Image (cartoon, rainbow, N blue to C red; front, top):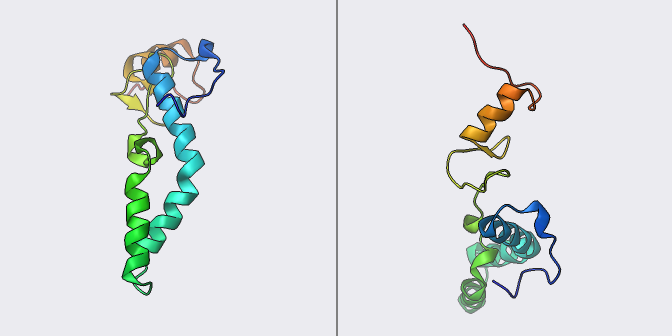
Length: 113
């Protein structure tokens, strides 16, 4: 993990170590995304020789775990929570409620019927 992290990272915008790790995972995934797509295309292409496809499979399996899209988790930007996060606002339930009631989220208001 330390091999991917930036040497100089402004820690003032991060809440805890989990958000730093998530930020690192997003950066690494973005960096290696095209390479992974190319390897996956080679693996799925049945017209290529089996040896080439096997080499691509080996390269893909030896890539770092942070290059996988499944490693990225939506986290709350205020508290760093990983569960109960609204994807559109990137906030957990409780901070979302507080900000909505305070009027800090445009277009969001308390329902009444």
